[in-house]
Length: 226
Ligand code: DX5
Ligand code: ZN
Image 1 (tube, rainbow, N blue to C red):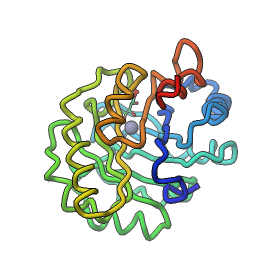
Image 2: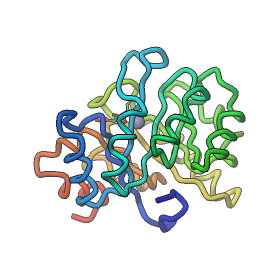
Image 3: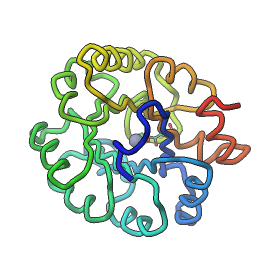
């Protein structure tokens, strides 16, 4: 599955694997897919760009044969350029990197596209929208971080919605298609708010994999269907 294959007006759900039970990853991914999630969001942390270490391409590689979901690798790492190929080989369909990393932004975007994948650009809460704006016409997705990257289960930062609104305005003004994704502290209580601001791809870890009523209920509530 590729990002461009989804209907443009469909709000996409991207459960973050970080909140899954790592002893039962295959099962949990199958359950997320059965609940209707379109995208599996894989948070990759190197202990350097962010103060935590999570998973690498080996995890994608093991899960790839078990799922038809779009695999979305969110690289919170200092040198994405060095690892793009291994994530593509492991089965990533989409790669998002951070504007704050020292690698050349244009080179990272070109390398992701050269591997046949869609590209996303992200920014930390303290980085202004103006830092990514010049690059938006070269990527397929813009990821707004609504928590400080590094850990799941943090509190949503509503002020980050200004970046969503700015990206939506940019897309309307330029006529360029752009998926707007949000990541961090997203759940049933703020899903409508973020969708109304212009988000069309919701990442949810805790609220999806650890929802008290199960993943199907999580999916319905995140989409605003019940
Ligand atoms: C934070 C990660 C998020 C996080 C989301 O660095 O990028 O994907 O796991 O988790 P929740 O939904 O629990 O805030
Ligand atoms: Zn993420």
